[in-house]
Length: 448
Image (tube, rainbow, N blue to C red; front, top):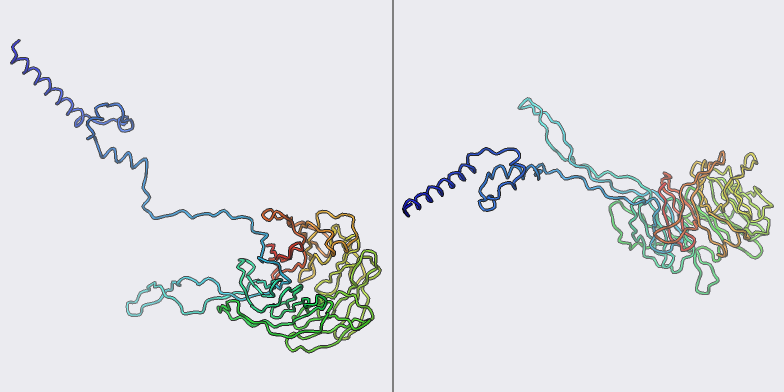
């Protein structure tokens, strides 16, 4: 074979290979398998010019694009905030009241209006020039034990803000009226012996105004060495006791006018008072484990004295809001309910001190901080003196039948401690239970 013919055969062979390759890529139909499996043709590595439309469609099927603009709602994990610390410092006392606040501003209202000229109904968006809606919600005010400054916050969203800047150092006790419009602060003078009591009126707050915590508390001082005091249920008066020699004198004072009336004088000086309802101020002898205790009632209008309970060692008491029953305990912390009208006694299945309890406004239920364990001690002396401390649970008691229900254990996992609860108070709607931890004097809130 001549050289010329060999070259011609090679050219023809290369032309046939090129034609076959072109036909394979441009004219051979793609099978479904080829669309899904793309590694059967090794020549594709060298000739990357296949069916781009098919490749893009396959990619779109694998990663669809959402062009709707929809974004899924972010769901936050909510921790159990049923039990929450309110104050960031030890407090001397607190008051729960209803405070006005703005609601969220509503969005524009869509209204239908008729067009007389066109004879048709049109829908248009208009914004009504109305005042922002408001609501009354439970709030709490409390006194900083170190400075006497007053702070406040709403119950549903703890946002501690200073209300006043009046300095009264080392306040030991503070009593607010029901509306938290007046406060009595008690502290020791520099001689560490004389008890001073300051009765102040709180300035009125205006809705939407921010006082920046610069309010001044103005008031007057009550007699020195007041031994005990309590607030009337209608907030208009306070009752206090002070000793004159061998006798104890009881005085009522109007919080706005400072008008004073003597309603009690008795030749015994160790009393604890409670103004539970308008008709009755109760007086209980200061308790001790080995001393019989007594309880009396005073009508502030008639100024008479009536015996209610007596001859009970370690007697501690808490009168119902309607004045018809008394929750009391003895030196073993056995808790009982005494009916003043019938004289009947209902023994309860739990043990605690009445001052670790509170009645509801209708006197149907009682909320108590109940120790999980109680040692054999001389009560209530050992607890008052700090020799014994409790770890509490909150229980609810039906005052009619004595049934008890456990609500929550006050063990503070985050705080690595537990609670010995005192000064229990409910808000007006009875949605929240506030109390102070006796161990450190911090204020807490329980969402009921």
